[in-house]
Image 1 (tube, each protein chain N blue to C red):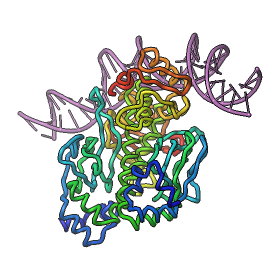
Image 2: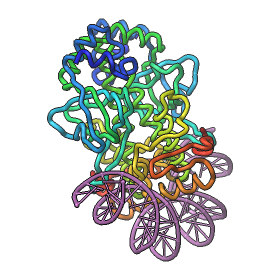
Image 3: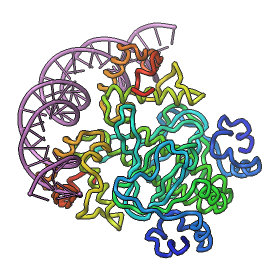
Image 4: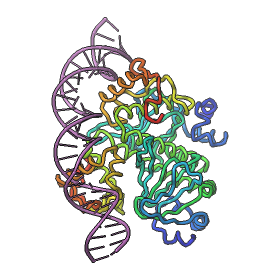
Length: 227
Length: 227
DNA sequence: CGTGATCTTGAAAATTTTCAAATAGAGTGG
DNA sequence: CCACTCTATTTGAAAATTTTCAAGATCACG
């Protein structure tokens, strides 16, 4: 898989970007790329064969199931993101592809060895973990003290930012990677409430829906209170 | 501050536990302990003099303020926890003491140097960051698809676990580190709803209130659906 | 032992969920 | 490529939950 890195779209942004060419090649020999179809599971909670991966393209969701079997989406993973449990004995979450995706997959043992061998990699993964932490806290902040409409608006805006290459500005037009049910799930609302909130946002002119998944932002500032 | 480590209550559980005695002494010379009174601010979002710290005793909250100035609690920090922004240019959150607390404080530059000098420290902080991530996701999971009563029950249970020395089992009797307002804030509910939920939990026999802050768990399984 | 703040409780108002169809969309096989 | 079928989405109206507004009760502290 040495050659894979040369054309990897996230070679400069993923954690492995901190490695030298030689180190990266060495690590690449331990891993391999894998393609996932929409809905395909990458890791399952409690799996014996624990592994980890960097997302190369596409999008993943990190989920958990409660006692009644309801899915709970805890995080979205975008390209260059890293998933996998390196410290707990077993993975705690299910990781599923939201769209056709490509990952660079490593056995946990190999990644642990690399962590020990390349100190900069440990720092890079620490850094990425902190970014995940910020993302989780952003989601947490979305959920609180706001009406359903504001929550949905905030989520749309977050998805628009994720869809944009230049992560600073939200994409003006993009496709939602999530179903209504998944959006509802992330916000702790019902499908119907999300659907109504989208209708309301469209009516007030904040956005336009293009079919079921397409979104065009008309007035992003209107979406969230703080754009 | 070399001697401080010898008697540090978190010397075996904080990130610095992975260092050798000599390394730890070296790091300790760069840091110093600081006592905080309840309500005192450790870090403020956007501060120039960015720093980081390990919590030695007490409890901290990590907060953010929205456009209308409403506080949003994003995380609770318990002893051995680490706070501080090592990678972003400025801290993003306010960190405030919930109870009288003691921290081991480091200038950001000193900690960055230590990260580079001691590879095991980078791994230890990465590990701790992953724990913070799990904690944030647990909070996220608390918030969703459940009634106010279940959310409050889940939070009480989480606080009971944190109050326990043996983190596996929740403490049977403990004092809430949070006001009703802070609990409401964490769950995206109002103070009144939290208060009513506690009254209801007491009436069904799940717990007993001892004054305003004291909690005795009578039937923990009743609190959250999945105990 | 006040005094201010926090907490509890009640009742009306508002929002969200639930239940129930109707519509639109995606995917499949002919 | 089209018709068909199954799933996802939208919308409506009633029910349930939560918030808001308003006092009263309790607690912490000086």
